[in-house]
Length: 129
Image 1 (tube, rainbow, N blue to C red):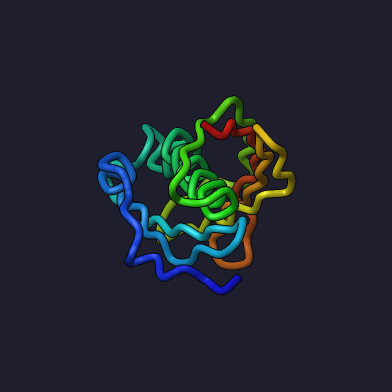
Image 2: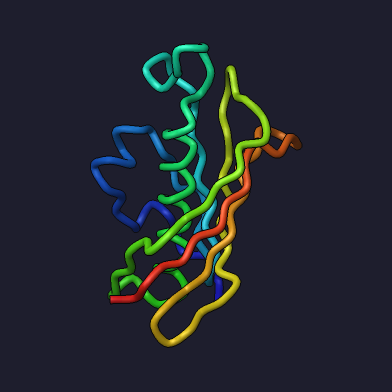
């Protein structure tokens, strides 16, 4: 299946608030970028871990939708993340990929990178509604 034009898809008010930018959506994959802004920093001045987690959840959701069809919904059942590197400036890119698509659940892996540097890895389970 060819890539879906991300401009044709709607995002949520929450992902818009964070500044998530959907770059690419293909069968079971999604790529979302986020630029660090002052209001997304934690007390140490780094990109807040909750923002990184939200970026991962947004990208995983788009990956699920591209796997089961945008006419269906899915919800996060669980998600685990490992933070590997702090982000102090610039943009991060999250690539999410469905690794298992069952009849009711999907398992998705995601990586958050800044350039070649791996900043976080995550795995989540989603239920199709």
